[in-house]
Amino acid sequence: MKALDVSASLAAMALLFAPVAAWAQDFDFSPAFHTQEIVTNGTSLHVRIGGKGPAVLLLHGYGETGDMWAPLARDLMRDHTVIVPDLRGMGLSAKPAVGYDKKTQGMDMAGVLDALKIGKVDLVTHDIGNMVGYAFAAEHRDRVKRFVLMDAPLPGVGPWEEILKNPLLWHFRFGGPDMERLVAGRERIYLDRFWNEFSATPARFSEASREHYAKLYAAPGAMHAGFSQFAAFDQDAIDDKAFLAEGKLAMPVLAIGGEKSFGPQMAAVMRFAATDVTEGVVPNSGHWLMEEQPDATVKMIRAFLDAAK
Image: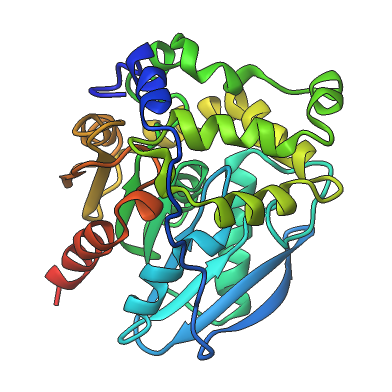
């Protein structure tokens, strides 16, 4: 999907590049990381912490968990304290029945940082993580030093209504008890659709990774929580418009798009919400930047975070 025009050509591309070879996926956070179950804001979040130095918070998106950040986390831990939660209802975090609007989840993140006695952070996010990160940054503007968002729009911001009309994004409106029944026992089939159609090269989302994430999303309550992330978009749009009414974000923002996905339009979206936006485009990548082009993505993020030094 280039220039926010998520066209049928992406689906055709997925078929053209059907998986033909294994691609090594990296979930190794190194033994220096430890995990904590942090109780906050009415739920419990599974959180990895490692490294030493200025804090950086990494927020994952749908179809993955905090596991996606392993290559970046290992790089950043050399000179940062790296915090990697699984979002509410996802991965190894608890799966409450409610609280999937992104404003509430932004409060989850504030609670995690408070529990760790961390004040200010750099923020790096992807997909649903962008939405949670924006809510956190908008409500805690003094706590976010720099903000990196990757390849997903923000509800209610910029061309959101046009984005909703794109047929490839039908999953934004897919959910509820009947849909949960349809997907039960078929989680891998449902998730393959995301990993294939939104990749430039689906083979780079490895079979091992697909099995790993499909097992996590098949856990009791996990698909309900995932559908709830999307069902909250209408409320998220209301909340984001209220945040915008308070003014644009002032911290430096890096908006990264995959060349075969949001591309430069990620920055175009963020210019509606922030005053200091740098554009980044990762070549030969679709939506799954950390899987498809991990080295280039890590290098781009690291350069942005290091620039302030």
